[in-house]
Length: 256
Image (tube, rainbow, N blue to C red; front, side):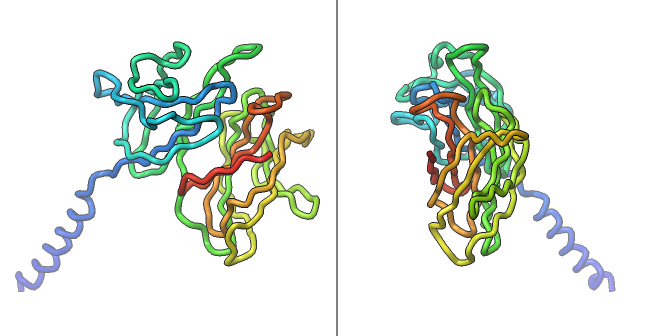
């Protein structure tokens, strides 16, 4: 009798230990260069437990504005972040003498370290470095998971949405600079790929247009972040614009 009772008990204990013994896996981090007046950059990360920075994370020519890097695995913890010139081979000197900032990375999660702000300009230009958790699991067929992140320094809070039949249908409202909305499911044609999506952003309240664009880098089960970028009143590279990026791959498109 004792054996009959002990065997399932022992099995239950073994299964419980197996489930609890796993250690958290590394976080999957990507870098978003959304500083409109900055040159190509690279980023150095140093955990608090390390005495010195290693080498730039991205390598090569670095990231140009506006773009995102591929994801890299990092252990959870608090890191010092240093921005260096694109193409730098060491982390010895920061870009324009910028100071290091602190960022906390989580385990087992895809994340984006978003660099926003300005290096120059009137007022008090400053950089903003934040880590946002991403979602990369595919959405149910027939819908796109979409969120908005306001990375435009000097912008008002934004309402962001879909343009359909000349109607503006917001999926996120009152998204202030440096903040992100929740993911929302946006229905499109089931089973389709390379869908063309018309998206727009405008000031909350007045609806003064920030930017509107058409994107064809959308699939019906994708998960995306729409970045509101640029500087008010600017043209050319720092113009008010939208950047739509897949959360599961290096797939971004800018419009207009």
